[in-house]
Image 1 (cartoon, rainbow, N blue to C red):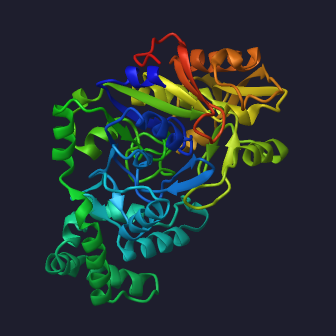
Image 2: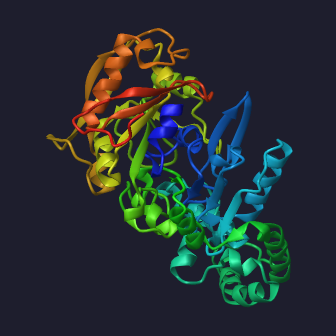
Image 3: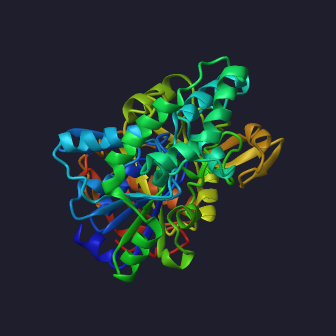
Length: 446
């Protein structure tokens, strides 16, 4: 780990998901946070989640960055996130119960707030979609971002003054009550009760509220290491994902600049996180999706149940086409491959190297969901290793076939692999001394 700390010295790093989310970013962020002075969550809301295992304790966080486990690290929830204060305060209480300090936790004053009507509308709208449902978490994220775009939102700073909150809520709450009652047949919300509840949240959150941009740039001027943490994954990006089966924000690396309030010149490198196979939660096309016993095997061995929803994830083989797309869209410098151990028992492993779209071989990600839904995967079969990798701590400890599999992924995605995760525990990680290279050289040397 000393090499990791040296490698990240004076570096500002973005960590993103290179698939559909749930790639194990929490563990990788936790690992990299050891070298970070500031960790910034730059988009998403409580529709995301990451699980961290520390000394057999399982921590499930939705808003608070995993860097909170390090007392000297400042953890900032940035302006691009949408914050459910009830959930955030619940996480603060849980951390305190575990004896973990939240003194370093900071919240952007300009982050937008998920209100109770956002959750109600999210669930009602999704139900009305019927067979065309998107598969949202029902946590109010989309409606919160919609109000932000319509300039009708409530921000954290509004919770700090009850009179201001009442003034800001007058118009949106009247509109939402009309929607709830007249369109969806639901009960209206009591304005006084909502104001009292959220003003009380504001009072509890006030010690953590800061100017996001000023906090980050002060750290940058002091030459602190800043780690930008994205939620969800590249293929769920609002602009660059499998629209309309996407989230309501920009998880790609460029979203860090907008969500945190920094220019691209502040970013030194970008690390992508991908599973050794592929999963997806919710609706939408998934070319490499498996059915039957293989799907069940990956799901059960990988513990593939959503941190936020508890939903069983859809599992499939590694998709190199979306992998290469993620490399391009994010400008990845290197990869962290997670859950390699889940493949330990398989005698053969397939990797998607291209698609067949209406009889034509393509090696690019189609722009439309309709075209993507018609893509059939073209696989290359690789031998499995059929032995446990859980105790491997160096690259050379891995079976030759496991090393060959990683090398194949690096060459297919044209980006080096610098970190390999082999389980949920912190120490079940290989920080590769000489990164597994594709044609592109790593800027991150570990």
